[in-house]
Image (cartoon, rainbow over all chains, first blue to last red; front, side, top):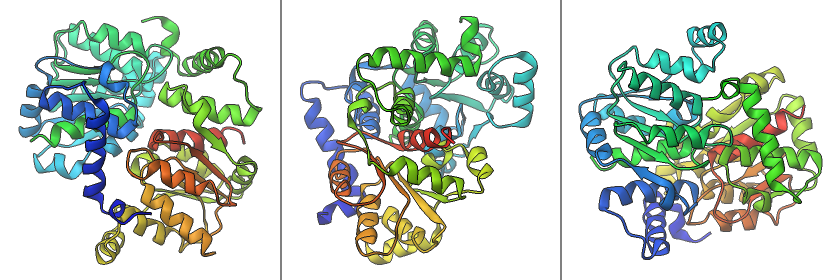
Length: 206
Length: 206
């Protein structure tokens, strides 16, 4: 084990240099590049350079919301675990995930839907929740789209990166049609680590 | 949104069917297939069919350990969050992650190492910790290898799937030389979601 790889900030610095080198001709506007490179750093998967779509206003809205202490809602405990809470709390924000709440489980059972959908229904009740982070459940993203269309919620950013084979690609494709600040990963790929990496990348710009 | 994609167990069932179909000629012994397919399910990345290496005794040792109530240690809160705790607790097991412990932060600072290394040093002190799950930090995997070689710990399974550009591939390549039950992902890819998916896949066999 070489010596330098025990020093955390050097590991990260060198990783980003390698990513930039390997991206070669693929260059991005600075802030978009920061997001895409952090996702690649998290996945070691360069395909994210092509499938990560950031709506024009997404970064500005998200930065403003974070600085104002916006709350974040995630669809999984994993995504929540990956978000830099110390940083988020320094702006007065917090992150919540309602998927394991008893009232959510009960509502899902009664309505015959997923807990992810019921969790979104709970999330929109609190207007401090301005940033929605969905890394796992296409049903959560479908539900959130419906609430936005119905005017029930107006997020400052939706990170829609559910991963998987059934519904994930479709949920993101549909979501891109909305006039709302979003970041999605087209196709099947995504996940909780990708979702958290995007949140952190935006916070590290502040 | 079609109706079936709101029913969680049907989503999973259909996903695994699609993965099996798309793997085509690539077939695996049953239990190995269950692990690989769950990793693909989690990442939507078929490359894991080629890079996921399972040592001959890994699954049997892990199953036996889990049934006996083995404790699991992870290198990140994210991997911990992704493990099915209800299932694990039903065998008398538990999962811990020491990365954010104050004594770990202090030890890392004093020794000029990563917190991930110091967390492994803490983990091996408790002999109930029999399964080590490393999805993020190559330094944790290097350290664990050292402890195994020194005879300080004898894990029933090491899931070594750190992701990244600096040290990740090397840490896994070195680890494969050990005579210990392991599951690794060769090269740069891996991560906390992959790590948790492997643990869950093995538990779902029991």
